[in-house]
Length: 389
Image (tube, rainbow, N blue to C red; front, side, top):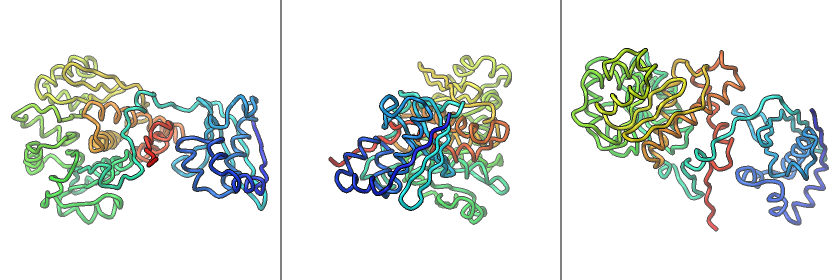
């Protein structure tokens, strides 16, 4: 079904001149309302036309569909699309001189939805926040020739909402990393003063398996800061087990990494995730994120299984993206178990959104980062924006 609508822009200008706020609240709410407040009359007219066009494509009319329930959103590439409940629309918006025109085509595919419980758990964003209030993440990793993993983690942390993301790499690699990750603050591992300022730390992605990396892990594990241990960090953890179990440590192995850590076969771990979790927690404590088709999050006395995600996410770097997202939620103030549940859930949801645009076969790790904003945008509850009033 296709719907088309044309709006006369001068008519909208007159309405806005008389009662702008009332009109915007009549047609929108939440994030959409905040975005419309910044738009010109032409942009607002195009948005109104889009909602009318979607209602026509539905065949219900505006009264039944509800203007506020007809949402206009944008992909990571900036293309508009429409959402009504779980229905998805392809949209074309334009304006020429005095007219705004919208065409809406109802698509066969439905839109993913954020679980309301997960939406409520997302860290709030306050209107008077500055970047220091949103959490500082430190990713420790990277090595010569292994640039992607640590970069993915640091960039994913920013996309998941933290205010600052630092990346500590070997001094010899600093220039290369600084050129690759422009929003990330790159530091050399010879200067670890930032470790004392970080709200949460991720260690392991791309750090290598030589003795110096193992010594670095042992030194960092002694620090009193919430921490995610992943990838090569897990390799070194298996070689030299920590002297004490810490509740604020998060470990994110896949089946093969977990098998090494608990002296079992990877096929056994994949077939018996709950038993594997029991063995792991008895040995290491903390929180286990056992990655797989249905990722298990476990700590002593509590379990959760994730339902988002798709087979296309079985690709290089996907786990590094997950590490960055979990660490970001930690830095924003979530407790460890909540950060893991949210991180795994949003990682999978972003992968589902990315697969809708790219297809599962072609999905790569950077697509998951690219579509995180759209995944967060699937719920108006994700913003938690507080008003001064």
